[in-house]
Image (cartoon, rainbow, N blue to C red):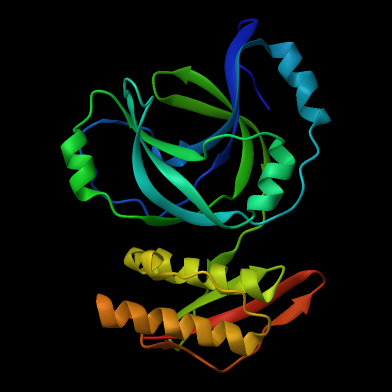
Length: 251
């Protein structure tokens, strides 16, 4: 951990946000993709020594955090200076609020003014997301950030090379989480799919497969799908507390 010279700095805590961002976005002063985040606490201008002493006091639990960047909002509401998206959670919400210990508006800022509001409204589509870390950020310039310390979250899915085609390693604590994490993986491959994810509480592996194939059927019926089905071959298994499954997607 390295801090800039000077006795004070501007700091905040937040969750890094991973999403299949559009390659081209409407006009605006964009937040750099590697630093897009969901802020939980603004610390403001603080003494660097104070921040260094704060870090060891933070006990961070292990959990998954996933969801959908669902709607555009322009903040602050009375005089907008940013384009942001709301964060609606599929998994990890309870853990998040137990850790943060306060109510807040979960959102991710995409860009700052001046921006093309009409362009953003016209082009925006919901996106899946997950967070891979909770971090202490320092603002070092206009839309310039540095991560001073981070605490890792559990990763819900990762791509796997497989001769059968599209394949992901899915991880979760329960079959319900397994369903959502698999649906998020599909949505990272084809972002339109995230809008077709429905709430479900599968209690076994067969129910997970059933819900995922229903998702693909809805997507195909209403929009068109690059996926045919999720393969029924294979099985999920527990490795300690973590439920793991290699999901093969037939296209």
